[in-house]
Length: 240
Length: 240
DNA sequence: ACTACATATTACCCTTTTATGACAAACAGG
DNA sequence: CCTGTTTGTCATAAAAGGGTAATATGTAGT
Image (tube, rainbow over all chains, first blue to last red; front, side, top):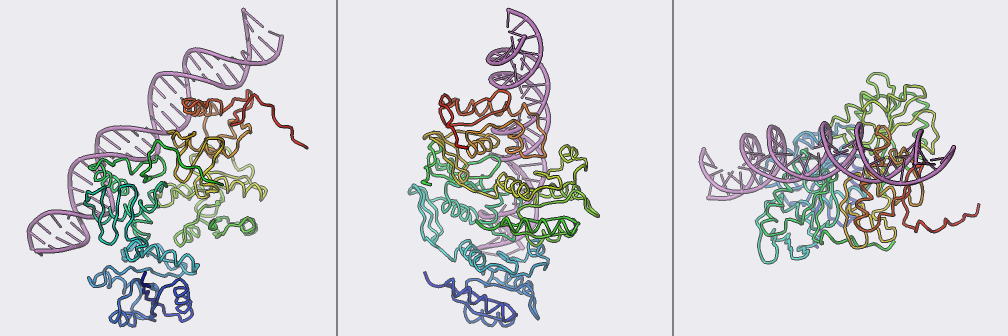
């Protein structure tokens, strides 16, 4: 896997250095910028795969810059993780439609940061741990963005594709609606829990047209489970 | 297991400090707030996994705040343990539909507090001590949310599942109906003791369909016991 | 056997949870 | 700008679950 490039935009030197170190440790390449202007310059040279952006920046604030990027078709797709200090109205980060893909509250653990970065990259398709995931006769090709059952191609929307991708990489496990929203839609978006139901239904409908309505199961009171296993079969006992 | 975060809302400094100490000792992370307003602010920054809430607070009372939280879909799921002083109309705490998950009467032992917290966290699924519990040929998988005997999957309702989970983690021990209500339903809900009988019956019926009606045993005058061991065998004498 | 009490079982009804269909705003490409 | 998709939300329908009370059955002590 080619190393991914992360742009760090943070004015405080100490924190920026630390971030760079963490990223390097985790196997990412990284570039740094101290403010939005700087960052813009860097971006013109080489497009990063993800931006770690401080919420408060001298001059143009991080949020403002992020908003601009999201309006620019060139950069629309660039995932952004906002860094906020504790107490900096974090709710606004969630609430306002900034367009960030995730956010982190300082201070945070390196481990958590890296995990979130990976999650975002995965969600946005920059990381394909596996170009192709197959499960039973299901094949999901993340590179071609194609999903098929047996030899039949299914026509799924982007969201459905991501949902499917998440399910196929996490089979046989129950997820609450909130978990699914966090994992598939990303944190930092406010979406009704019930909306998950609707998407599940859409997915089921498509799967149902190919006789696999059974794949997505409702677990009443909890959420949903994806499983290719025969639902009448028992879970495999794990060696303790 | 990632450390869980507990929010302590208590106006008396001494008690608050003590609580924080106890929690730290027990391996939890914790944040403190002196009143509801404070607490709300803290919550906006970082969602705790559980709230320890004093019943009497200056300004907005603890109960009032709890009620509000339970109406907010964002916080609905947050488990709350109420702290009440002895004599503070404890029955009302139970009676009113506050939505708390448990309550404790001051003064209490640190040990009990921690136990309660663990119990609530377990009940609300924040703690997963064991993804899978097996006992004999019974397998209960909390991750998949599946329960099976041998290789047959059983279809159990949420409450039945929780009851089963409790039984399987506490086998060979008699519990009164009240104990079962406290542990499986949670304290602070008041439900007729006899209701337990009904649920026991429902469980037995399901188990019976798979030839294991013997698993749940009635102990006349006390309550119920769950045991995979042959009930005709003598108990093993324990060295004192 | 009779009484008093404990447990089992059933049926009912209300509440909560999930499924579904329709709609409108946002979006993507011409 | 249109035009067909995508996607989030809401209203409503459908289903499942769970608590209670009434009734039946069982047990122990006398």
